[in-house]
Image 1 (tube, rainbow, N blue to C red):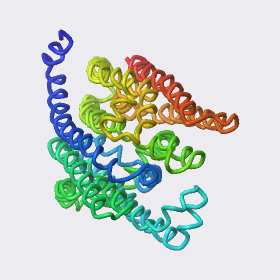
Image 2 (tube, helix red, strand yellow; image 1 turned 180 degrees about the vertical axis):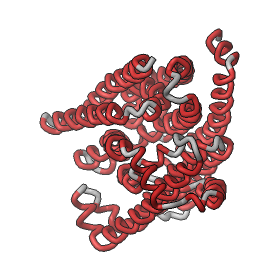
Image 3 (cartoon, helix red, strand yellow; image 1 turned 30 degrees about the vertical axis):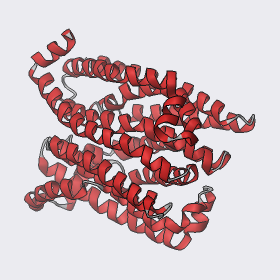
Length: 428
């Protein structure tokens, strides 16, 4: 309690907590809706449908960063809106150009391309996949602009809108027996929810700075942050591959039913990470970007307190999952989801450290440590691939594969947290 009082006593700390409270309020409401909707969704759609959704979401999250080259993460960093506006305009243009190429490729070769990844069941829905990729890319870009402008209420509102609209779409279309299209359409609605709200704020800023939108300025801005596509883009791709790797491996090794079981476990566990962890990260990122890398002592103080708060939030849910995961999943989601609960029991081991690390990784961006961020994600992806390769060679059961995966990520995220604090301390 004394730590919280100390934090509230500082101006910067109070501002950070205020912004985090706004975002967490919106995210918390969305989390309640998301959790409340899952039991209905799992009783409407079967494990095979959920397995298809996992593959759909995996491809979306892996491909979407390619559209922006991850320049979107640089939007909160420039000192002037002129430079930031040039980055925003360029990022939006690359997103639309990139999705045009992807749409043409999938429109012509969707079946052979998806079959290469053992996902030919998604071939009829290639157009929906393209829309989901674009929506994900645009939302990320616009949310980083909103972070720059400290429009945290708008971000919190979109988190609520995304979950509510996506969940209702999945349920309503499922009740109409539109399967699995209803599940995929709902995911698209969830990925793109809030775009109009954030866009209505960003585009007036673009219009205001339109006389400064010059090719020369844009090239200077992109060159200034060139380390982002060089290191941060590969890092993000490796990160997404690591996160989505279990679903991809299960789809290849065990089929859609087991993939659906794992998909539900990962979805349930991802809700607090994606909503609470990511939104807290937005507020944290905005504050340390404002402080700047020239004052690492203040960043260290804020980082320590944020890590403590994230730990306090995560500890109880993780313990509940570890003790009663299978029983809890059967009770909440239905008797056919026992395996998902068993998977969540083992995954909860790493959930705690991931939840703490999620907002703190923004330190690497502020201190221009993109190379370190890349190496961290390269290590994680390599360890994960090694674990899956060994699991495939010795023909492990699904439960044993999940245990190896969880143990690997627990070690990985522990090292990430250590690296974050080491980076800040080394700059003092």
